[in-house]
Picture 1: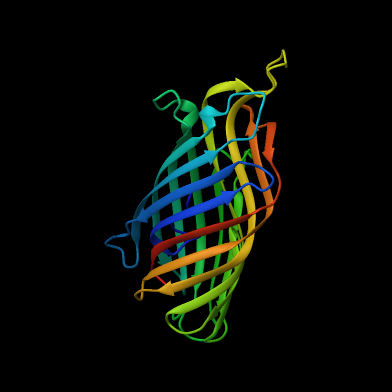
Picture 2 (picture 1 turned 120 degrees about the horizontal axis):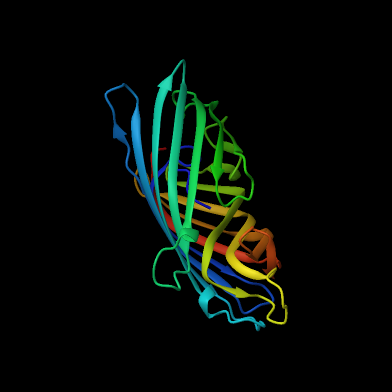
Length: 286
């Protein structure tokens, strides 16, 4: 899953590490992620061009005994570049659009192939109360996003609503994350949340996941991981815009699959729910 540097996040930079052990298995995921966005003010008041980049390194410890060789599935990397444009209009409204390309693969061939390329696009409308520090501050995001990895030949909706109704409390409803947050003071806050996470990458050296099969129905072309996470998070503000955070909890859905070139399931690696931890530091505009 690639970043939506304009709509779904107010982070301008982030560095984090995630650990997913696989329950009832010797497998585990370890992911390093770094992203940055660079708003460039344009002549039109309030308008910005927003280039952004993201890097992900996934170390998949695939130690379960299988009928196929798992050595080429131990390391996946992705490099993403996006370009966004946003401008205000009307009363408290803002429009944004974004297009990008991602290279995601195990790179077992040592070079980039056509199958490694993923194209994305999105547009959205945002309405925000001017001063989010006041009680009853709110923000709503509505839009559409498209990715060549979704398996759907049409855009998917973006719906997100944020409200801070009290000095101590706020909530967010929507995708990819919903939460309920409590602010102890300007430095410390905790939250309960449900969110989506995962990754998608090309497998360059295709292989048969069931070697005894004489047909071509089980040839692995890519790998996907889609998880629904619930848990608790803590954030500590080092400055007004730099925060350290730690999230921990348990998966509600743990879906890791090897798929063919038509994105049809070939092999389910593990569906057992498990705990996870994620920690990092971010530079945010709010």
